[in-house]
Image (cartoon, rainbow, N blue to C red; front, side, top):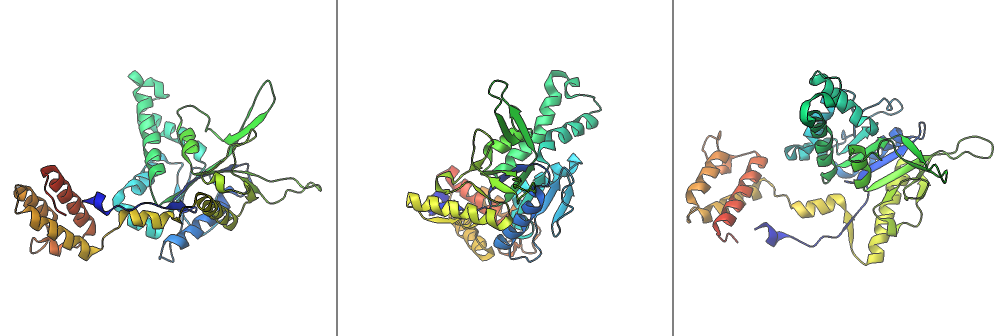
Length: 349
């Protein structure tokens, strides 16, 4: 029974596994630094020296960087395939070992590229050309659904890069900066902005001699710009020099400060996820399946238990689960046997 194996959770700190928004004008280093952050995270979570971030490029901003994977996001078919691969739980181990960071560059272009894809595929000029709102329904299924799943993924770090949009109040003349396209109601860019763990606004301050200084990153929400810091109460400052290491150090320090203020223990997102899943190795999966199976074959669940075990062992020379070498199949079997025992009210310990 899985609920008997649960442990109380500690606070997860650090940038690993978080969903991050970075936005600012051109030449503020958005993409270059995001890729460097991705490389640093890869070293933290993967034992593979070849692990690198994957950039899903909806615009061209990667020329100043190297050592990363690249997918052309201007073709929305590629966007859909990448999101499908990342959201498939069977791919989790491969992704965490090879590309545990996904960078969506030019995120404000998601709706436009998706809309062009739908209209071209359906041979229509506008989404409204399909009756009963079907065009908009298809558009939503291609944009909202996969990105909402992506935002919910645990362990995998996702960095969304936007340009800046400015809204000015006609009466007060007060300007407010935010990620481009993210104020549109019910839009996927708004969903990403509103559900991010951190959002950094970037600007290049101008020095007295007219030269632009190093970019600064701000993650507080003010009357002048949008920002977010999930460890807000633990932050001593909300503005830092924008570099990969300063961002990583800042986020970790904020988390540790907040944990200290609350008097609770802190851990990394990866350690927390490992504690939640408590993933079994191959021998443990075989042994646990065999243990539960032995209990169930002596009950009214015998026939269904044997059916599940036979299906899992299909293709092996002996037809026994001890010869199944696919851990995903063994994990699925274990889940099915636990569910069977629960449905039948059988105590399996």
